[in-house]
Amino acid sequence: MSTPENRQFKLISRPVGMVQRSNFEFAPAPAGTPGPGEVLVRVQYLSLDPAMRGWMNEGRSYIAPVGIGEVMRSGGIGRVVASNDPSLAVGDTVVGMTGVQDYAVAKAKEMMKVDPRLAPLPRFLGALGMPGLTAYFGLLDIGQPKEGETVLVSAASGAVGAVVGQIAKIKGCRAVGIAGGPDKCRYLTEELGFDAAVDYKSEDVRAALARHCPKGIDIYFDNVGGEILDAALSMLARRARVIICGAISQYNHPEAIQGPRNYLSLLINNALMEGFVVFHYAARYAEGMQALAGWAMAGKLKAREDVVDGLETFPDTLQKLFRGENFGKLVLKVANE
Ligand SMILES: NC(=O)c1ccc[n+]([C@@H]2O[C@H](COP(=O)([O-])OP(=O)(O)OC[C@H]3O[C@@H](n4cnc5c(N)ncnc54)[C@H](OP(=O)(O)O)[C@@H]3O)[C@@H](O)[C@H]2O)c1
Image 1 (cartoon, rainbow, N blue to C red):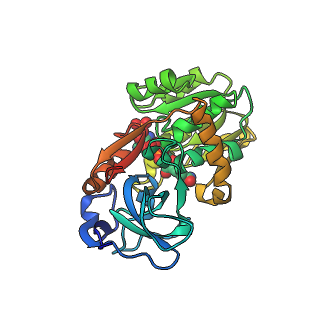
Image 2 (image 1 turned 45 degrees about the vertical axis):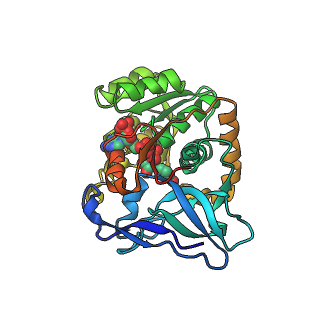
Image 3 (image 1 turned 135 degrees about the vertical axis):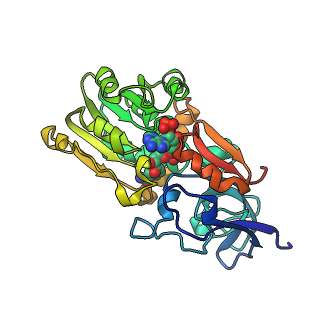
């Protein structure tokens, strides 16, 4: 096989505030050839995640920062076009860390084979992928929801939040979502089965939470941090669990993160606040995937993806996450299926 043409986004400077196109160089590069134990993957869809903003910052985190001059890190799904490992064959569909490029040379053992007949490919980057697993382990392992409890989730129409609310319903809880705008709120209650939705852009969040969570909040699954975390803390029930999954409202100014002011609510209510990273559950991904796929097949887990066409749009498309312009899991289409 002749070496195909590859295009890559490399990080060339660390963003200050919102990520910009000028933080990257977009240039052709050789696709590379897989060495022993490796495969060459034709990337079809890339997963655009809020965490990518954090990976661009210098400093200690759960994963090393993307180095200056390196291809921007990203999850992706694609087809194996050359294999140098017996575990994967040409034509297999795989999910894993591909980077923001057309072709990725990857270690076969770090790629997960999926059956493309089971769902549209972008879904393996959303409800049936890392965000779905994040919702599954965060809510069930840390939250330990019990029937009749009230579960509140923010960024509720997004990739993680939509799955959190639906699992809460599956477990017999009352699910309340916070989202930006009437369309997203209607989607939560009319299509996903949430019991109530709060439009934080047009409503007084505390007043709305008091209305929709009359017995207090037993579990708050926090995706946004900032003011909304404070509002949720002010409404905790006794023995509540606050799950720190993310804080997207704070990612663009890491030097001045707004921490919770209402943390004494944890003391008053004998409550717990715990953070987590989904990668730490890697040994249990198969369990999570099986549960998520089962619920999807049974019609209990619906999903929606926001697919944008064109690798070249990457930096502008990534910005959509921080402006709330994505509706569903944000995915970049790189090549036809
Ligand atoms: N801990 C982990 O292992 C892990 C894994 C995956 C994701 N996460 C975290 O989970 C959260 C959700 O990720 P996702 O992939 O599901 O993204 P998403 O919810 O699909 O998209 C991000 C959404 O966040 C909301 N948002 C953006 N800026 C906001 C602000 N200033 N205040 C309030 N809401 C804001 C927007 O929705 P609205 O229009 O509703 O505002 C936007 O659509 C992120 O914080 C992410 O970092 C954590």
